[in-house]
Image (tube, rainbow, N blue to C red; front, side):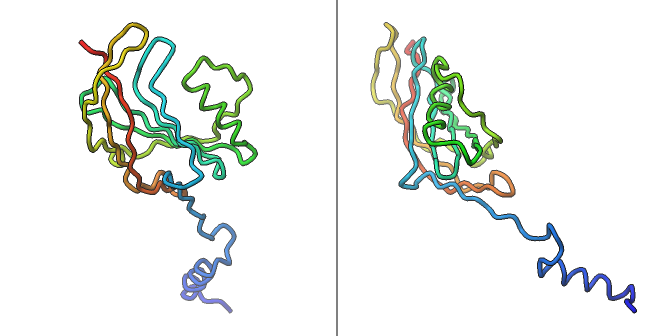
Length: 177
């Protein structure tokens, strides 16, 4: 006969050995934006001129796109990021079409939508350096150009998703006054 005093010990053993259904730990996925198969796109132009810079990192084999936004309206060029996760059936070509629709006139009508999106923790997104690199003109408007270095610290985006630390540099344009 089973005594009530031994029940907690038995449950502990069953859980730690993974014998209770659903007790197994979920696998963590790590996104490495420094990986050799990561495709990077830097977008700072819209149909009306230069705007805040967005960096798109496609990790096709993980069906993920990481987007880093550099705000050109603030002197510090703060960085913010989001991870978009797509269904495993979504191809690299479909991810490229989705990215195109995020910054253009949406010429691709049948693009996949992300199955989930997660903000990168704000404390993980840092602008570590910016320096003026001159001026440029677009659509008869003059902009000050800046080279901005960002650092994304290693971060847990959620319980199953981790972003590996990385640094990158981008151009940011500010309307000249």
